[in-house]
Amino acid sequence: MTAVLRQPLVQSVQQRGGALTLDFVRDEAEFHALAPFWDDLVEQTATRSPF
Amino acid sequence: MSLWWAECREKSTRLVIGLLRYEEGVPHAIAPLMLAHERDHARRHLTTLSFLGGFGEAHGERLDFIVPAGQEDDLTPRLCRLFKLLRNECDIVRLNHLPEESPNTPHILAALQEAFMHAGVLNRHACHLIRLPANAESYAARHTGAWRSKLRRRRKAFAEQHAGVASLAGERVDYATAMAELRTLHARHWPAASSTFITPTSWRFHQRLAAQWLPQGRALLPLLEADGRVIAAMYGFVERDEFFQFQMGWDPALAKISPGKLVMRECIEGSIRHGLRVHDMLPSDYEYKRQWCDSLRWLIDLEACNPASWRAAAFHTLRAIRRLFPQRPPSGTPAVNELQEERES
Image (cartoon, rainbow over all chains, first blue to last red; front, top):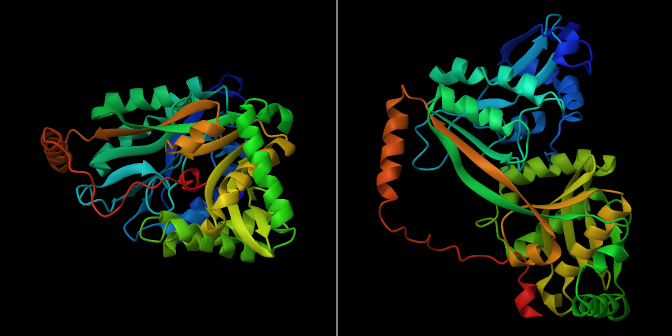
């Protein structure tokens, strides 16, 4: 799953047409593979967090 | 977060990270959650849905859903559908240290109230902070002449009587040594029994975190050296335009020159020099934080109970009964003034 993921796009849901699905990552390997997307999204949030 | 997961999780802890993705699989919003058991006596039998890193010795101090700014009203309610989907896997939800001002907060609270029972704000924690001006002089001008004069005298004594030098970890003292000095100085005031910072798990986590983040400038560790040895240290984190002051230590033998106050001054001036907007002292409401800071914001702990869980019902009922009776203050751990030099100097 995660091997084919691309960088997150800074677009609103309206711009993308709202085609979003909700699912869960429960597996450690998938969690680690999320890291680059995670970091990019953290940079876009309204609130700041120390760690 | 992966470092927290590697160093701090309990064996029974399970990941449940909610993702909103586009059709091609790109994550666009993240709910960083886990299912875990708190060590607290009354809660240890409850399976708790919490933020990843939301409790334990090295818990996060400001935790939130990860949603691009400006899109919270669109995305967060969709992400919050996970509460209904996960309801049968937990007894309670406990989301600690959520910034009250976060645009996600009202959506999270509304979703909990819809899917769970007794959903609400359990605790509010005051976080004192400084809205940083453009230069150190402007910050000093916010205080009285007596305050400035006292600090000036102590800084002069530090420099002239003790050959004092201020630096950042990595400049004169290597990162690992600086962290070890911080630990030693911190333990002079808060031994391992009263500080979660230097328990084995927490210390291992922070050593690894500092080794990664100090060289990158994501963590900062200002030091004061006097007479050739480190007498004060402050450890904190930089996240975009904000600094979070996390832990400190100072030598009580030099209380007369207030090394704690001097290192705080260095740290705040460092935040100003770095062009940061906010210097946040994180939760805990001490007098010295009020003296240094000019603003306040809040972190909240949200709690909710699974209506189908008899454990949650029993826990909630017993706690309600216990609160009907007067509480005894905890014994053996006297209240600590983080900057005890305030009384000693």
